[in-house]
Length: 126
Image (cartoon, rainbow, N blue to C red; front, side, top):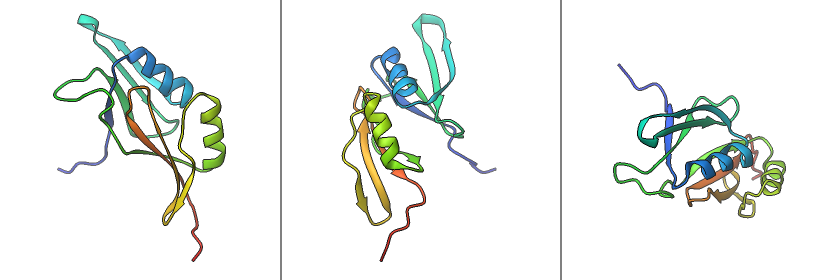
């Protein structure tokens, strides 16, 4: 028996409706599941198009605090184009930085959960 992959990452948020708008409409993630359960519980699951790993927008539980997740990394083939598109949709991103290993920018969701946008297939010159 072995662990084979990361399936879902829980993102603690204070307002699931606002977070759904951010991840679906601003970032362009696809909504996979939006299930309303008993006692006002809600399971919202999204993923970037074609991704295997999903995120769930959850009310904080078990010591989690809204905005406490930091350093999650998402990938794009064209960081400049993606940066411009996300900015147009209302996402506040850092400037694009080039370091050994690639180009990246950072952003936060409305609760302060921190993300890193990286460009795939960057060839660094020596």
